[in-house]
Length: 257
Image (cartoon, rainbow, N blue to C red):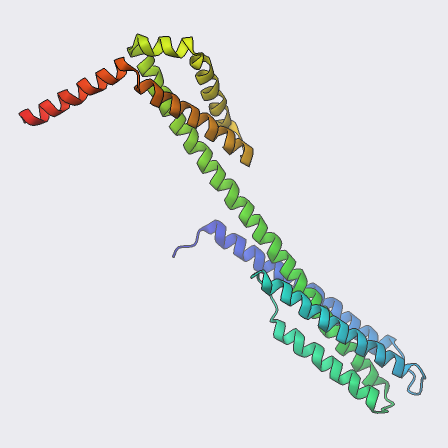
C-alpha cells in the first residue's frame, strides 16, 4: 500500500511532536532530580519524615487509582491510551508505593534514602503526565482527521449533487425548448422561476471553501426538486408520445439489422 507524501509528513510531524514532549518532560524531571539531590536537605532525625513518607505513600496510591480509572475510561471508548506502555507506569507506581511502605515500616535514618523516595514519586508522576498529554494530543489529532475526512466527504457529495442537478436542469431546458407543452406547464405552475433560482443557488456553492451539513441538505433538497420536476415533465402526453415513438423507431432499426 502506497503512502502519500502528505501522510508521511503528518506522521513524521506527529513523531517529532511526541519526541519533543518527551525530551522537555525528561529535562524537567532531570532538573528536579538534581534539585532534590543537591539543594534539598533532609534532617536524618526529623520528626516529620514519617509524615512525609505517609503523604507520599497516600499520594502514590491515589494517583495510581486515578490512573487506573483514566485507563478504564480510555479503553471503554476503544481509543488509544497514549504513547507510553501503561504497564510500565502501573509498575512504577506500585514500586513507589512499596518503597514508601518499606520506609514507613523500617526506621532508616539516611537522607539519600528519603530523597530516593521523593524521586520515586516524581518519576511515575511525570510519566503519568506525559502519558495523558500524548493521549490528549492523539485524541485531538484524531478529531482533526475526522473533521478533515468529513469535510472532504461533504465536498465530494456537494459537487456530485451540483453536477447531477446541472444535468437535470439541462435536460429540462432541452425539453422546454423542444415541447411547447412543457414550457407552458412550467410557466403556468410557477416551476420555471423556481427551477432557475435553485440551479443558480447550487452553482454559487462552486465557490464555497467548506460545506456544512445544512449546505448539503439544501443542495440535496434542490436536486430532488429538479429530479422530481423532470419525472413530472416526462409524464406529459406529448413527451411520453415522443419517447414511445423514439423507442419504436429504435426497435424497428434493431429488427431491420
